[in-house]
Image 1: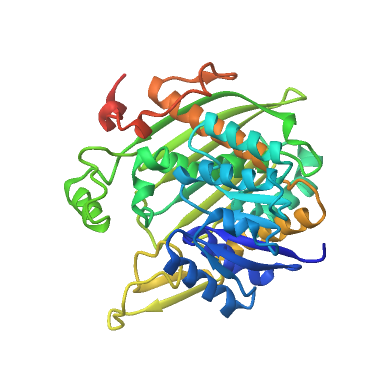
Image 2: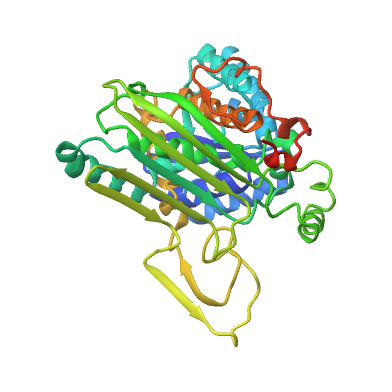
Length: 417
């Protein structure tokens, strides 16, 4: 196979970012876009054509999409609550011999619970499909380059790193389902800490090492509702979601932190500290990373780019997100990310996934990693609910469903001791 035909299933935020980054992906084209909302699929297909990355056909049915003989791989970018059923549909078509599929790539998080993640993994294994876990921050150029330098220059002389920090923060997601724990499977922890857990683990593992050399030993976590429980923000969220989200009745956390203690197979101890927030107020989305070792340090902050613009009070234009994702202002000194699909790692991860599928190799980030990350997220929720550090392996993790996802969470429980 010389060129990979890709179908975007889901025409929302994630696959739009993939489309924008696809201009740097070789030996592949977008041949189909599928969404239950045809107008959204048409919009994304139009974007693909304008970018010169394919002439996709529009579908509203998943089974029909994967039966298209031009489709060799699927990029699954649908809401969390829809993923398992869609994977079941895809796998059934594969098992019936009605597709030319060789691989499926899924956006983060892989699933809402450990049980769901294991079921999805079992399905793709049954179908014999290659699978990629779309964790873009592991492929972010600054993260990849920074890790390469530290492990090439610092580690051989001074020793392994012992502390990784990662955080993703912004003012909150766009779509109502993200805010609804019973649909999404949680709040900001599941939505964004999945990034930070995997990015920090990536930094702590050597370039030539297998991931299994690092074992999680303990985990401690806390979740809180800091901003979106205040009356004016409760009302703002109601208005923004047209009444679908009411945080006075069924809130999800807007802040979370988690600390994982890992042990390397040589006995070395290292720590991952991750935080995430929907209550951050700044220019827009902020990603930060740190890696500390005996005689070195790495620091990354995406809101400290190479480009800034300034607008005085006299320049008053419409609100938008043309400078940075989740943009909150249009005046003053504003950071600008020239191409967010590159900075955040979308382009590099898509190149990797396409190359892997064409070479019939399992991608570096795959659904085994997706399962591992869901396990860390569920362990974080469990530790926060229990109010204590947990030791791996953790009993009951497969069947565990966070109280946030069940609509039973009391945000004032953070005061309990």
